Image (cartoon, rainbow, N blue to C red; front, side, top):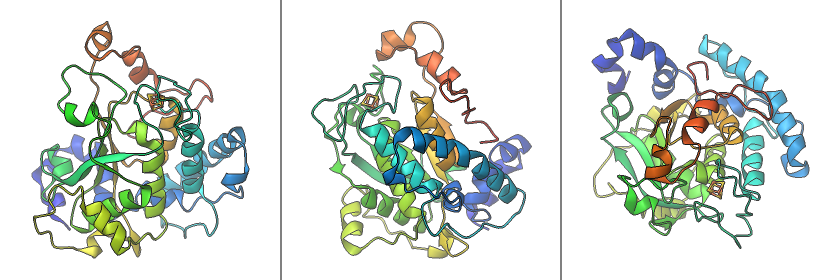
Length: 329
Ligand code: SF4
C-alpha cells in the first residue's frame, strides 16, 4: 500500500466510490485501461484498411473491451496481450488518420496536419512540443497525493481564453521542445517509476496532440523501455530534474508490465470521435469546464458552441454510441 491510499480523503464514501478505478490502478491492484485494450485482438491490419472500416472495427471491439474491463473491475484476471494488432493499435491508427483531415476538436479545420501546408485554429502541424513535465504537487489532493501527479504540459490550444493561467505555453506554439511519441513515453515511464500516482496529460489543450499521446500510450502498452538517448531527450524538459527521486520500478508494474492511470486534463472542447478513442485509454478524467451557456465562451475565449459541445459529447451523433466520461467509463 502506498502513501496515496493512506490519505484520509478516501474515507469519504462518495470520493472513494467515484474514483475507485483510478485508485485501484494507481495502486497497481488493477491494470490500466490501455493494458486491457492491448488484450482485445483485431484481425485487421490497421495500416491496410480505410478509415470507415477502421471505425467499424473499433465499434465492434468496444463492447468487447467494455465487458473485459467490467470483468476485471469485478476481480477478473487480465488476459495475455494480443500477439498481433489490438484495440490499442487500432486507436493509434485512427488518431493518425484523423490527423490527415484534422477533426480532433469542433473547429473541424479538416487540414492535413501531416502535410503541414495549412494550419487550423491550434496552429499545429503533426509535431508536438512539450513545455515541461514534472511531479505536480498543485493538483487536487487525490491526484497529487504525496508523490505528485506525473504531469506533461503541451504547448498551444484550441481556445483563446483571455484569462489563461498558462498563457505562455497555450499561446506560444513554439514553446518547449519538439517531442516524439517515444520521448513522451519515456517521460511517462520515468515519472511513474519515480513514484507519481498518475500520468497527467495537460496543456494548453491536449486533444490537439491526440495522435502523439495515443501513440505514446500504445508504446507503454507494449513493453516499452526507453533507451539512453530517449531518456536524455526527455530530461531536457523535466522541470524538477535537479531534485532527486528514488526510482521504484515495482511501483509502476501490474502483472510484470508497466502500469499507470492515464489522467485526461482537458477543456473537453473535442469531437465525439476523439472522445471515443480516449474512453478506451483514459482511467480518470479532469474536465476543466470553463463556461456555462450564453455568450461568455465567445466573448472571453473566442470559442463558439462551447457549452453545447461539453454538454452533448455525451452522445455520438454520427455513430450512436454513448461517449460520456461517466463513472461507468
Ligand atoms: S486540433 Fe482542432 S483546432 Fe487544431 S487543426 Fe484539428 S480541428 Fe483544428
